[in-house]
Length: 261
Image (cartoon, rainbow, N blue to C red):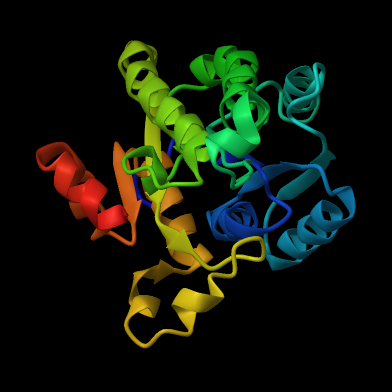
């Protein structure tokens, strides 16, 4: 349980990408907060409904499933309308977690791969935050957590589009944090490294006796998300030692490039 959570009473939170992986783990973690009321957003409505029912049985005051593609024009308005209808427009925490990873060298995937990845991983997060920012301000103290990646600090071959979207999300988060602090809206950033999820099982790493130690569990990342949001922390890496790689990228970029070859 996080002592410094936002708002009074039970936390009202929106979690995107909640049908699996980090979003699902985050929803489960937030449901353990006293009097939690959750809005779960993702494309797979059947999985959201099942998760919502499970969270209600586990003690959440409410858990509402909203099946939506966040790249759709009407998606941000639908989330806002649900909050206004069911929670009187109150929002304590927005977790921008939804995202995709489409590996391709730029020469093969080209601009279209970059465009599609940015649309989901960056544009959709910005559009949703824009729609919900008035509610977050009115509910202050409140928080936004943007789930980026260690790929926002170090890019690898074949993941340029993904890194571009996560670099953008991290840079925008830093600026937004400064802009919204006077309004009582905290902006936290979480940068996971390798995480074993349904979409990214990390079998090669998990099966290695040494490399498995650099793979995080979704539950570990979920705890970092709660710390960044309700605990109002600025930034969290998971696993924590990944910040060393980010620092080395700044201090010795040529060395990092050679290592990544």
